[in-house]
Image (cartoon, rainbow, N blue to C red):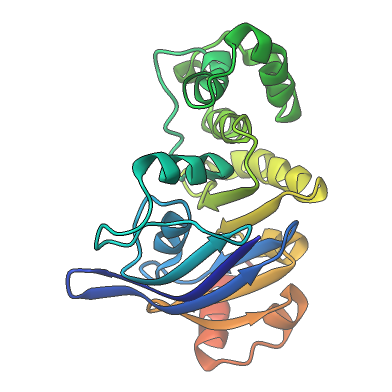
Length: 251
């Protein structure tokens, strides 16, 4: 589904991603963990064409899927087509405050895919049902809890019928008691076979749901393994120290 070769990204003199090589198969769930500033979010943003790589290649379904920062490569139309196949949900919900929940879900298919709003309405309600919010469809974002807003954001991304979903710390802005409801939606997506890359500090969730885990530090992939091996038998000293620090705060 996704193949990344020798991906590098710099902001001025700051090299944020360094020679990233990664393959994600269709239906796989990849957990991405690491300290702040390790390049996790930038990696997702490069996959979704919100940032353009300095060098290297990203292929989605076998096709090159980016324009490098030199300006060469794909047009804005081609880039938009790529983005429509790669859904992304952020730490902050970014819902349209002047639109109802249902209008938020319908907006992408209507304006980007050109679908008829009335025809898509039932599908949009079904998506809200899948995240447990069909009864909130006529409310506005400010009337919802943070966990509910994040679930609407997930439904909105799914409305574009993506091949891949990217989640960037989607629970970090939530109160602890709301985290579980959002993770429950991600778990259902995993069970349905959605290809997902999940940046998170929820170690227990990664262990339960991910097929593979990577640990990033200073712009590099330091370690990659199955969840069982990664958490029970980490090989790299930096991984060991990170896990010791993070897990000690969750005991």
